[in-house]
Image (cartoon, rainbow, N blue to C red; front, top):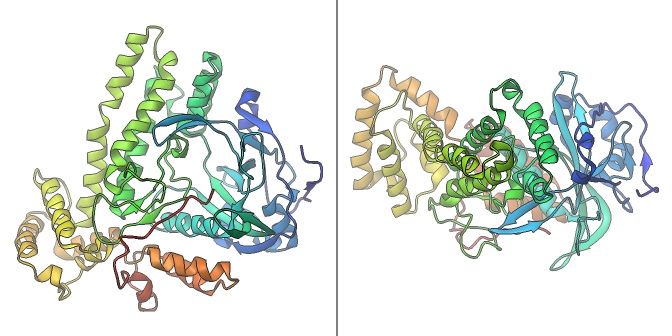
Amino acid sequence: MNETTSSAPAGLGFNFDNTYARLPEHFFERTRPVPVAAPRLVILNRALSAELGLDAWALDSALGAAVFAGNSVPQGALPIAQAYAGHQFGHFTMLGDGRAILLGEHVTPHGERFDIQLKGSGRTRFSRRGDGRAALGPMLREYIVSEAMHALGIPTTRSLAVVATGEHVHRETRLPGAILTRVAASHIRVGTFEYAASQGNPEDLRALALYTIDRHFPELREAEDPIPALLASVLARQASLVARWLHVGFIHGVMNTDNMSLCGESIDFGPCAFMDAYDPATVFSSIDHGGRYAYGNQPSIAQWNLTRFAETLLPLLHDSEDQAVEMATAVLETFPAVFRDFWLEGMGAKLGLFGREDGDADLAQALLTLMREEGADYTRTLRDLCRDPLPDTPFFRGEGFKVWHDRWQARLTRQHEPLHVARRLMLARNPAVIPRNHRVEEALEAAENGDMTAMTRLLRALEKPYEDNPAHAAFAAPPATSNAQYRTFCGT
């Protein structure tokens, strides 16, 4: 442990109970954050602080900055770096928290349990050749996107604070250093199970599986056969999550198995971005040269990752490997239908559809095909579709759209709900504001130069994404020119 890290006094509101650290010790390393030179609070999420039962006034101080930087550790915390593995772009690698430390599990006044993790908190034994640090820009990007995802109603890790470290990190250039405080239901990943399976101890693997059930799927505790039930439950949450990503045009960018949280939260917002013009082949990540994690590939990658998860569970499914494979396959084969149901439910709502008709999937896909052919903006087009009358745009004037519109109107008239109710549903499912890439970049560039005004305005606009607010019209507008060449980076 780093003995120069001090303990923070009580009074901040943290209430730690560190159950993960009671698993077999090879699942983690006890360590402490590496102190930084001059911690300074850049942004504090006061709303999240209140939800967690923390004292935002106490956190918005030099003491809070010291805690968020890792210079002081809250009472009751038990800092650890978690061990895990992962398939990165399809290749298996032994990993672990190389630049993150889990302070502990905070239990709120309502009994909810959340991991409190510092990202960019210094080297651990899993750092390999990395410096264990993070730059300000990527940490602020995660803050923006994770809070936007939460406001959009998509399960996600969240961001409690970002502190500047008073130090620099060296990537392609010299950058200001920062640490993000991430809040998550847990950090148990597919990669955590891959690590456990690689150790060759079925009892430790079983302990991890039962711990995961107890923490995230308590309804399975009394199941007759909890392990296949766990696989099915994780599959359903992942199918739902990825469908929700597609509904808002989100591209994760690096869907490695170590970035798939078993509880079904979006996690690790590195080279992520939101699509403007609709195209399933859209890729923004600078390291995704082959388009493995393109927008339209995300469902199939989720199933691929789930297959890796299922492989880790084989020793727990059945003593016979053949029987275990058969049981796992039976669950995995349900993914396309489960995903399609979640996707169609969401797309139906975006089109104001109640109930289900046989042609609904074709209706939704026909609109998406038109949007791809015309290069229509995904978010703006679907939001404009909620309006009566429709805006006078080239897309809506097109002959292909007119044919589709007649078909859509016929579908709407066949349901019992009146058109104004359908429109209300559409407005609740089609955001007016998303983290437009050009607006995110503007905010990050200004913040890196010490001006948080643009980021504050962007975050305010993202708080209520389903409302039409004239004051936020600039944040709802697509970029003036195509951002097809826009690239995002991991920040590691």
